[in-house]
Picture 1 (cartoon, helix red, strand yellow):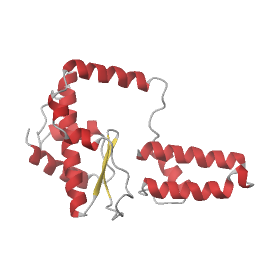
Picture 2: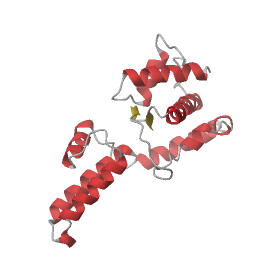
Picture 3: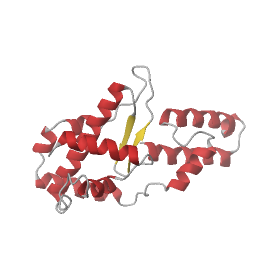
Length: 196
């Protein structure tokens, strides 16, 4: 696998699609011309799919680290939406660490994972998915941002600040309306699920 070539391709794609792409959409782009970095069968069997996923996320985290060190941009990395994000010069300790970054930057997790491990991961994933709601759609996300009167590209810290402000004004314990407080909570949970 040509990691530098993959990082360069990812950089181009993320700049070309500022709204982001899902992991699957990225694979389709990276399988096609002009990139042709991943084989057309890279998602055909569980272990191969895991390895392809790991390589892609490893490169995304490498690229993210480079962008952050150069203070040019950030990358939001989630299987349903991978996109460039504005760089924020936060004070040390103010940003929340990405819990998956260490996993994907450690090549032992790539080489030590067996086909049996992948089968167990897939089984636990499907069990966890049973009974859970799907990710909110784009329109409901936009509506939640509009509800809090903040920009659509606001980060989680900004969402949390707006949420606390609105709850302070409308919480029943402060003389507010219970229904309004529940709407605030629902919109906050929608954005939290989207941004995490």
